Length: 88
Image (cartoon, rainbow, N blue to C red; front, side, top):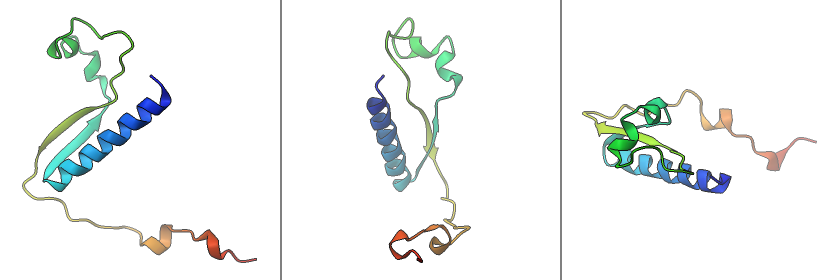
């Protein structure tokens, strides 16, 4: 898999996760060993992993009763560096 393809796939997965969260659906993005389980590829209709195939993401998802409250440990001013106004 080309690096650009992997990066584009990762961006698409992140965008999907953000969209689902906005609709009240929680997700967990994994690349865990589930793809190594003997039943993984047959579940998808394959006897074994197709040649030249790489799993970028397995998403676990579910509805949440209540979304956790957003909180910041640090303020923006603590993590933002404005290089436009560097001291001489």
